[in-house]
Amino acid sequence: MWLPWLTAIVAVAYAFARSRRPGGIEINHVTTFTAGYLFYWWLPSLLGIIPIPDVASGLTSYLNQIPTSRIFGYGASILACYLAFASGDLLGTHPIIRARRSSRRPRTFESKLWRAEWIIVLLIFLGACLKDYDVFFQAYSENNLLVVGTLVAISLVLFSVSLRFGLEDRWGFMVGYFICAVVLLTIGGRLYFVSSILTLLIYFSHRKPIRTKVLLIGGVAAICLMGIIGVLRMHTPASILLIFLNVATESLFTSFSLFSYLHANPIAWIKAPAFLLGDLYNLIPSALVNKQNLQTLADSHYEISSPVGAMNSWVSFNVNFGLVGTVVFLFLFGYLMRRHEKLTVPYLMLTGFIAFTFFRDPFSVSLVKNMLEFSLLIPLFLESLNTWVGGTVRHPAKALGNLAAKDRPLSP
Image 1 (cartoon, rainbow, N blue to C red):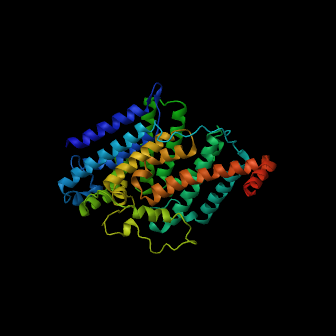
Image 2: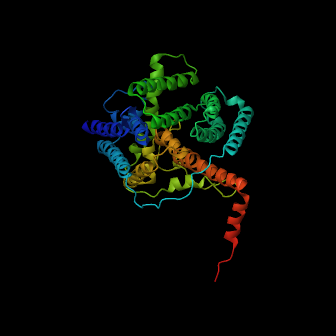
Image 3: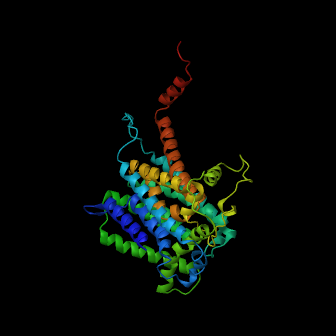
């Protein structure tokens, strides 16, 4: 009874201490991690205390058969995980290896190249929409998952390019992105829509802290908006109760995977990340490698139930790393996020994704696609590519000279 409340006090107290600024609240990676942590990991631990809505009554069949010791073990494990993340964040102000000061000049923003890439990605998105226009305003279905995934992927690239313009105080491109994001709402992309808004709030709160009252009102409005969109896509009459349940049951439906796993499996202490390595392997184009023998977590022997496709990330962590490995992972994650806490596209997108996809999607979607591929690899690749192309165009002689220097044989 006491453990969940102790966990909540620790998490809320640390997040508030890290987010509070003289003028209000600064939203950072600790803020979004704590919000997702409380909603997706902590809230299920209360199911033995609070009543369960009828729409999620199937959880009780798992919950009643889970040994009490295993329920307590889950509660203790999530507290240990948060303490590990917070410890990494605290130590993130102290570098393990002191890097030398770089004498390189700041990179020039190549606006023409970024603009060309933005237009190209927008045209690809519009072409994909016209090709598969029949998926819009449809209920959730496995038949349109590939189309939805493709549109979401293109939109994430468009968002990263638009955000790069935003860092230069050119927000017109972001308006174009949000027009596309509204289209995504009709195919179930509400969490991506909210994540993109959250990313912008993170940026502006670093520029100027948001007043607590404004943030609370905006948070309630965003929750209501998510519920309304969810109800509309269900094609059911809207009501205040149904809107509230649509949001509240998001955590409960994600918990199906958690409680079915705890029902059928003991908590692992240490594991090798075999499933995560398979997810990373999927980054390689299928034309280059054979992926037929890859085993997914859904096809494994763990007997995990996921009726709506969501996967509680505690389950993914436990089958890939075990409890000890998860603690180490989250410590390093908190440390690295604190070390790179600056207004860059990778940090902003990673922080925006932590609140939702990090906690409720399979690793193949959250860590590999949304966070590694679209928040890190693609933005860093585009930044490096544009810097190199722009420098080559402006100083062709210097670029050719550098290439010649690399090809010059070493003197004896």
